[in-house]
Image 1 (cartoon, rainbow, N blue to C red):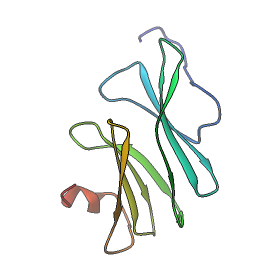
Image 2 (image 1 turned 90 degrees about the horizontal axis):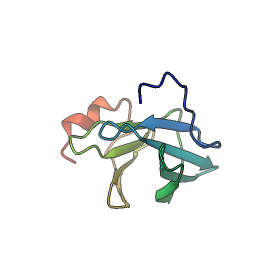
Image 3 (image 1 turned 30 degrees about the vertical axis):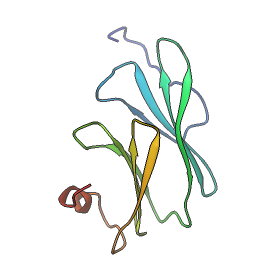
Image 4 (image 1 turned 180 degrees about the horizontal axis):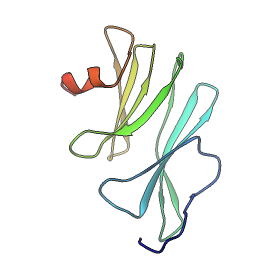
Length: 113
């Protein structure tokens, strides 16, 4: 890093997020209607690798694509719905149906994942 360049990564992703652990990895999330694909893109090699794909029954008003857990797992949360996914680096997605509709992700920090 530190080259003073703007690096957009591959086209077609609606959500992008640089890894907190590796500055060469860019996480991407693409969407086709209710189908989502989460992948990682390596800045050095230019290769994109799919982490997981999933289908949701509804989307809500806002989609959160964040890293906030200590091991660097990714969350995908759909506000105003009870849908929440925890994406682990071992290429699996844990679907969690919340007991109430999600308002903000701070609710999730209080819950044990």
